[in-house]
Length: 99
Image (tube, rainbow, N blue to C red; front, top):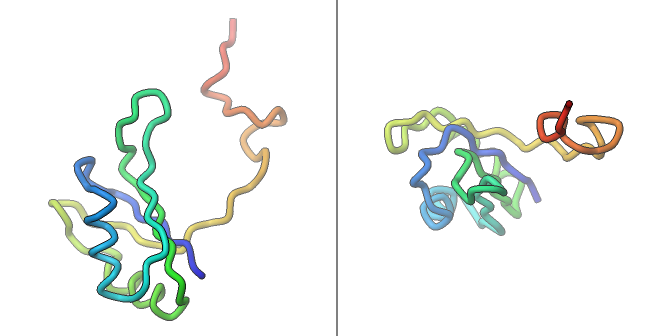
């Protein structure tokens, strides 16, 4: 199982469109379009989980740099989440109020 990061997406891109794009290279387990938690608007990136590592590598090679809706997609293997990497308290610094 490989989790892929897909960046530089057009904000109108849907999960169904991403699934169809990656299905050409293998089995897609999940597609998660990332949205802003306050506004609900798309943030321009997503994660696609593929069950077969070889198929995922083929998808990375084929789709990375591909022009979709006038934008060159960036596709890489997703980095694992790190716990508490942004601050000691685990909260993101830009969300804190400093007075």
